[in-house]
Amino acid sequence: MIPQFDNIIMTSILFWLDRAIITRGQAFTNYQSVFYPLSNMYYGYYTYGAPFKQMIVDCSISGANIISGVYLNNNFITIGQSGLSGINATEGQLYFSEPINNPSVALSGNYAVKDFNMYLTSKTEEAILFETAYQINPKTYQNPTGLPVGSETYPVIYLKYQGGKNKPLAFGGFDQTVSNVRAIVLSDTVFNLDAVTSIMRDTSRQLVPLMYPSDMPFDALNSVTGDCFNYINATKNKSVDNEYVYINEVNISKSDTRISNATSTLNRNVYSAFVDFELIQNRYPRL
Image (tube, rainbow, N blue to C red; front, side, top):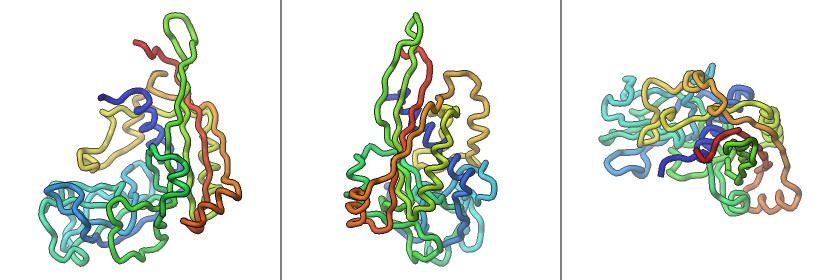
């Protein structure tokens, strides 16, 4: 099935909100590290992981080291060279078509790591808060190994579609589509929780450009294609109303004491909040 309006909205708010938090909060740190061998994620490719996830791929972020290649035996290589087939910045992984000898010495790179990871999810709030054990993204380079495939790290923001409706607006099938999106925020400190929810609250009454499949910067390995992805360039030609959604309202609710106590039994020092976005677009949904 091809992506529908709700799919496009979720992808668009993910890219837009991720960049808003990174730029307004200066929410990233530049690192240099080696890459370690991991269980292979794709058949026919050898996987090597950094001690961190997620890396920034948007080269419009000022001051961030955007990973466009890595050092192999002190030689800088990019995708397509020396067997490097892909860079999965979301997972902090490299994919090679052939194994690397002694990668903990031979393979290294420079990159920027987000202060808050961000994912789309279909999990329930209960599963995220009470049934998942998280591993903190370290503030300094201290993990002498790569993060394994599928590991859950925090601070993190999960975006979840909460449903919506079409309201008649004018004759001829012109409706106002209302979409509800919830951000489930898990932070390592109260300060960072308040900071990121403050940024999200202040996005109210702003326009979010819609990102279509043709705008996506990733290939089948979830690797960035081309030299880099530039969000500003990818969205600058959006010029008509149906290429945007409007953030009509943002509401924040903090976890109460009962939720905090229940969360702490599995994840100590995790501070949580819910941020609910109401998005609207006037459109002809049946055309």
